[in-house]
Length: 282
Ligand SMILES: [Zn+2]
Picture 1 (tube, rainbow, N blue to C red):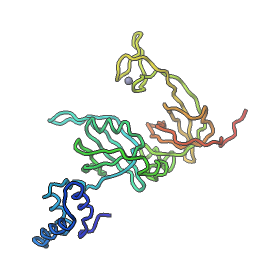
Picture 2: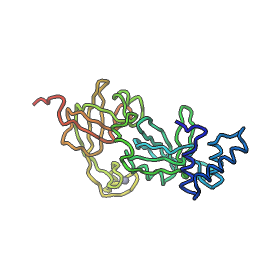
Picture 3: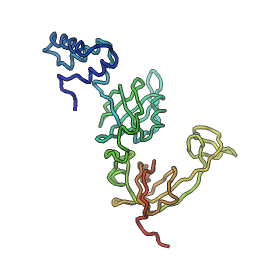
Picture 4: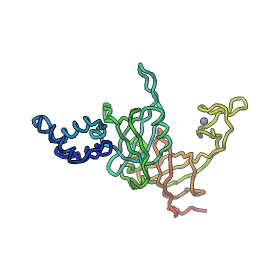
């Protein structure tokens, strides 16, 4: 809820953290500005003017810090302008009430986001970008992304906006969400991966080549292929990560993933049921 127009405690907090001044003195300065232009100002606006005159950065008053867990980061893209090229990524955060779509510009932010999966982030000094259908939180190179202590928000599995209702709902949503499902088939194959980025390697003459890192010593990795199911349908799924049990067959699983065409791309597995839900025969 936005503060009332005669309240400015949040502005006082900003002033107090950067200027040595008493509350009485600050109130007096606010009254002075307010009394000069009552017809055009609220007390809150007067407090903003005083803060600005004191050299306080008030940008976060209009756009208060946003807190959320990082649920997804898209591929790195490049925006071209006459001033040069800037890399950017789309990402989303979730908290107890919202799922917020964001875009971040600059290598510094991208590197942080690439290593902050599920972490609690605080976005400050951002702006907003209007697209045709929705508004994005825009993290520019001057904005701040901070990683907060993990207990600042409940675990991601307890945040309702992180969830898709079902597999078909997840497929329609076209993003990364949590979903609960049953594994009804399982197989695994091995492939040669780049030890740095995990991408699949190509054999070129007798060298293993990563599309990003060139010639590398290959690492053998497993791909898990599943068939997953819930009340809305049955879909193939693929997973490149580690699995806590030797087999997930017939177990319920809570995972994070997204659909690419008709195939579920599993990003992370959070929970596997102890029991097999369907007795395996033989
Ligand atoms: Zn690589």
